Image 1 (cartoon, rainbow, N blue to C red):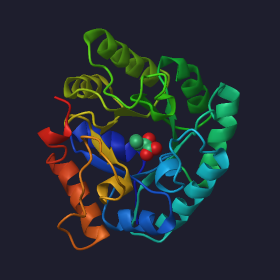
Image 2 (tube, helix red, strand yellow; image 1 turned 180 degrees about the vertical axis):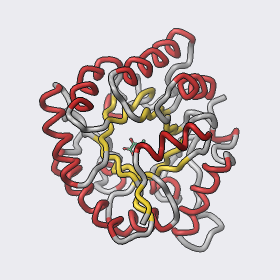
Image 3 (tube, rainbow, N blue to C red; image 1 turned 135 degrees about the vertical axis):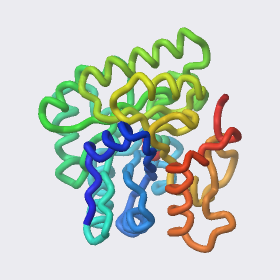
Length: 268
Ligand code: KIV
């Protein structure tokens, strides 16, 4: 049994070997992803949309996150590869350091190895508070879906030099506060590259170009599920393949080889 840890991911970054992350919300898909060699799983609050059928992540509760984290943890227990499990802190769960610590502890007791918090430099104090208490944090920057309304909707972030500089500085401050992973969503390639080169912590990208240390996709997106217009970075890995396991395996291989994201998945 191989357990993927934060140290494994640090070593992968140091060696320049990319890794893959996919969202998982239940035991069956978690086991399938682990069996396909996906190194890290994210119990994303995107479950609000893809599992619960809601319009955004905002209504997702701590009870929801703890329940799905426990399901995912049980799913990977039996596998050969045990991916690192990251669980999202839902909207409103990290408003103060004390509240965040209580909620993060709950997710870790449910089976998470680390928690993900959306936000910029203003969550640095919370990142430090959790880190000092043994709860590793992934800081989610760029497009932060929980606060998309404040950002003017789901749109590319860090477009001009001032906005890019702000995101670079936030990444620096959050890593300095103890963040063990950074997740960068929907930014130009050059910004993804700059943040990844500057950070010691592995940077996971989604729509952040080809230079980040890892790539994540929402499971339902990479299986071609769902109606309507897809974000540019989405690729359907089930198309032309015979099984979900093959699709997951192909995603992992393309991330590791650098074939994904291709230019058509990037924001230039
Ligand atoms: O909740 C989620 O699925 C996420 C990804 C978009 C990274 O945060």
